[in-house]
Length: 73
Length: 352
Image (cartoon, rainbow over all chains, first blue to last red; front, side, top):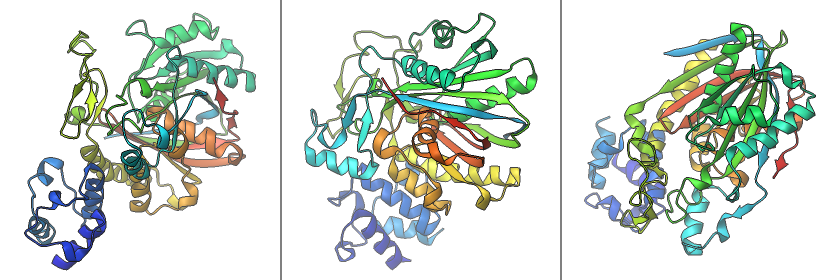
């Protein structure tokens, strides 16, 4: 799950997967914006079947948080 | 759960009007750099839009479309018993714009006139009102007008909305005819999400004042708008749409018993190309059956579904066609419709 999430996140944010560390705060990546955020939300829906409210999504800060989210689904 | 079925009533003609003024988004650079613009525009897919001038209202666009429809189809104005005007950019707070259009179009005083204040789902809501009145009896023909000048609602200094919206108006003729088979509709609303797309001031909850028209920087990105400009929380709307719209679509397919493969065209509200492409992919629909005008007209709110039919399907609607309409947005409200078209008259796109 970890690998799948990291690859999908890298694709959504148009960055290299090798740049992603699990403790990173993903909103700090340079390519993160209100536009690429949509790609992240779309990725969670299409690749992991996760429908999430923004109030909930905003509580997830790190890449590890996202890994936990998709692993616990 | 509002699911509706109608028999022997349908859309027999459709026309559209757009302002002549074309806004080319990539060079719409009064307030943002070309690089900033390219990033936004590439994602939302809106290359051009039409902007109504200061003297042109939604009703003027609808009037032009209605004249095209009435003349093109040689409609007897005395047979129009109901005129519906759909818009969130009316001429006045009062009276209702539909009444003004009754007079302008030379319709008799026996005409029922009605405004519907809804956004991107409204054409589908409007169809169900028109169909219901006809089924109730006494109403022979309905003129369904749907117009928006959203360019006047949103700040051109807020990049979240500055490149998205355009203006247009349409006119549809609805009537009873045995040629029309069954049609089905699903309509929904969720007022708990009213804040996601909103013009906060200028109504009676927060009346217009010097303060409400003052532009302010509203976020860390330097976007600027007043409380009388529209606001949109794109991420929340996106999440909502990708969850609820496919659900409603499947629900109506189940309810109607229609084979989705037998549908000729799927016409979605033109929200932005990112949402629209995502919906098509999620629903696994064939691209060739999904007409799109987001590139040339942008998001025209409730007008986008019928505008897309006029612009993209004009020569493709001879004989019997069955199409699905899907609208979603401000309210939030959303709806899906499955309708039959039988040699539907489509007028030439009018520019004013």
